[in-house]
Every structure is written in C-alpha cells, then in structure tokens.
Image (cartoon, rainbow, N blue to C red; front, side, top):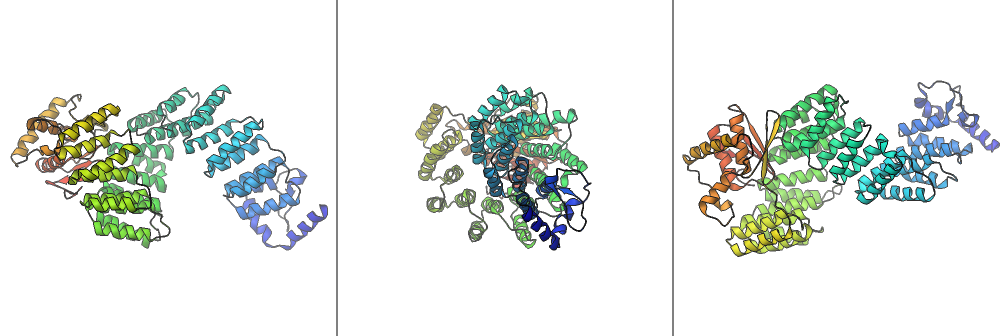
Length: 622
C-alpha cells in the first residue's frame, strides 16, 4: 500500500491540471490540523486541506468530476471502510445527481451508522425515489436501527410525495410515542403530509399543537390551505403570521399570491406585489410566474403582461404563465405572438404550452387552427401528448357542434378517456341537443366520478332541454338516492379589501335589501332595451313567472348589484363564479355594462368574459 501511495504522489507531481482542479475550492480556507490519514499535501507548495472538507465542497458545488477524483484518493489511502468518509461520499454523489453511485457506496459499507441510513434515505427522497426510500426505512427498522428526527422528516416527505396516508399516520403515532413530534422539522413534515393528503383539519391540529414553529411551518400551513382550495383560511393565517412579525419568505408570499388569484382578490394581490418588490423576491422567476397568474386570474391581464415584460432571462415557466393568462382571456392573437416569439428566443414549447394554445382555439372556435397546432405538437418528439391535449380537442370539436367527430376522437385516441373529456362531450350534447350521446357520456362519467353530482345535473339538464320531463324526474331521483350533494352556484367579489360571497337566492347579506332594489332598477332599465329573460335556460318544470324569479337571483347578478352600489362610477367590476355562466346571465351582463357604463369582468370555470358597452369579448361563443 505504501508503494502504491508513493507512486500516486509521484503521478500527482507530474499532472499539472491537478492543482487547478481544486484551487477554486481552496480559496478562503485557513490552514488547520487534521488526522494524519486525512491530510493531502498538494504539489508545488499548496496549503494543506482536509479530504473531507474538499468532498463537502464538491457536494455544495455539485462538482461530480472533482468529487470522483477525491473518491479515487479515498480508495488509494485505504479509507473506503471509514464510516464517516463513506457517509460524506454518499452525500456528495447524491448532491451531484449520481444516486446509483451513492447506493453503491452504501451497499459496500461493512458497518453503517444512523447517519448512513439518514443520508441514503434522504438521497432517495430528494431524487423522487419515494418507494425505495420507504423500503430502506423498513430495512433500517428491521436491522434494529432506531430512526432519528431527521429520518422521520425525510421519510414523511416521501410519504407526502406518494400520498401515503396510512403510513403517514403510523409515522405520526411513532413520533408521538417517542416524543419526536416536538421537533420542529418532524412536526412540519407531519403537517405537510397531512395537507398534501387533503387532511387539512389534521394538518391544522398538528400546527396548533406545535410548541415551536419555523418560517417553513407557517409557509407549509398556508400552502396546505391553498392546495385544498381553502383560500380565505390561507390569507387569514398569512395575516396572522405578518402580525407576529415573522420573516417573510418567497414561499409564503407565493402561496398568499396564489390564494389571492383564486379569490380574485386583486387589491390584496397588488399589495403583496409591492411587498415582493421591496423584499427583492420579485426577481425570482417562479415568484414572478405566480404574480402573472394572479393578475391574469383577477382579470388584470394588462398588469400581468407588465410583470412579464419587466422580467429578464425568462424561462419556459414564465412564458407559459403569460400564454396561459392570455388564453384564459381568449386573447388569441397575443397567444400566437408569444408562442412564436418564445421559440425565436430559444425557448421551446412544452406540454403546458400546447394545452394553453389548444384551449384558446377551443374558446374562440378556431377548429382548423386548433387541428394545425395539435398536429404540430404530435410531430414534436420533445413533447408527449397527454389527456389534457385530447380533452382540449374534444372540447374544441364539441363546442363547434361537431359532436360525432368529438366522439370519434375519444374512440380512436391512444389514451383512456378522462372525466374531463366525457364531461366536455356531455356539456356539448346539452348545448346542441344530442341526448343519445349524452347518455353514453353520462354513463362513463358515473363510473369514473360516482360522487360528482354535477354529472347527474348536467344529464338532467339535457333531458330538460329536450322537454323529456320523465327522464328529468328519474335523473333527479337517482341523484337524490345516491346521497351526492349538488354544488350550489356562488360568486365572489372583492370590495374594499374584503371578499363577499353570494349564492343563488341568497338573502343573508347585510345589504340584501339594497341589492334587490338595485336589481329591480336594472330590470326596469333593461325592459326599455327590450330585454327578455331567457327562461329556457332555467330547466325546472315550473311556471314561466317562477322561472323568471329564479333567474333574477342568480349569484353573479347579486354580486353585480352589490358592486354597483359599492363602487364609485366608472370603476371596473370583477366577479368570480364557481360554475359556468348561463346564457341569461351573459345577456344580462352585456346590457348591464351598457346601462352602468362600466367594464364588467366575469370569470367562470371556463374563461373570462369582458363585458363593455353591451358586448362581450367572447363574441357570444363560449
């Protein structure tokens, strides 16, 4: 061995590149005393340095080539069986993205410490190998190695990625039994996995009982609320964190911005934008993408583009956010221009880009153009078509009345049809009166989504539109017997920083009398313009007058009336709705924009409608 080491030193003396390989890592290092076996003396008078320290620097800088050279020295110095050295090598290879090499080091270790297990489990989790991480954890327990707080945190992250609810609860019980739940990292990991598994109440219980919380804990809870569509709760918790003076992180702020986007709370979103500018987080491309998404979802597409245009070094995420924003607003020309420009800038479209492209073609009825882009995508080897792309094409054909062509596409495509495809076909059948195919689509939907009441309601509406009241009664009885609850239509509007929610026929609002009076005033003005309620849009088997009364109190109309009595003249009005806007409400909004001389923006589940001077941006095609 000594002869081998001597020959290796001689070889180093003859290789001029060796000092240069590591000189970048040695800057700022002071001379220290290390165990003799770990000290390497560079040639040509370079200072002493620790092999362990150098390996850690290779890991931090993801310098795989230099790390391998260090590994060679480990072997030559006979340190391969040293536990500490092996642990550092596993970490280095993992950080450099060489998980297989890390596994080989771990497998060859004659003896392993808890750090060895923690490092390899953490490596698998970080590389998306959650199944292997769980297997290693079980192997660790079988070997009699007790897990540490770090082990639990790491394996809980793997459970979160796999949405492994049962295993997560078992690990939580173990943490409680061993008192590890008091550790802030373990508590945060438990909270995070519950939130990702849609167990929001359990996540909040963990959060409330934690004796210590970090900024990551608060961020995880806010993000958990957003992931589970509890946007108001997310903002309330965010404000609580701000009042406590907790340091703002880009992750917490991004989650709060996402909550504002979903609530269409543009005022609060703008305030968060100002905070992001002051903290410097706005320069982060992913934070900027969340801002673009927020402004676009709040109806402020111009502000969204301002954020996009001000960013330098745009990546595909930023381009997709802006293209998606324009697509939501059916701004076809802007979408096409950005699509061409991003490719000119060397950014190639991916699957998400094509979803936005095909979606906007669907919303504006460009059948031939949509087919061109669909074929272009299928001819791109770097893009793999998925159910979202086919769903857009089914929607495009169905909206245009090409029901049988949409059905043929579902039958011949290489993928299994999703609920969104069958739902799109069912909706198209309702609009174009094809109840035969509607029954087929509904049958598939009932199998895929047995607990979705909307599918039963949509099929019932198809029957009602064709005056088949016996089938309507049978469909509604089936819905009632299933125990599935129908989603009530509701709308949101932000007034003076507060979000007000309205439901169809709602009378709980403090100003409901003023709201109803304003609706009456609007109705009187609309009569002068020959407005007639489109009662065929109400599919209840009731008298005509009762249908008019039901239509008059749809949630978006209540939200509009409240906005008109709350905002000064000329202010734009932005309303968000959880269902698709009906045709009568669409006509109502057009006339209201003319009477009130305001721009009214309604965001429903499909798209944005910009009403101005008696017309809509969708051109009555949606």
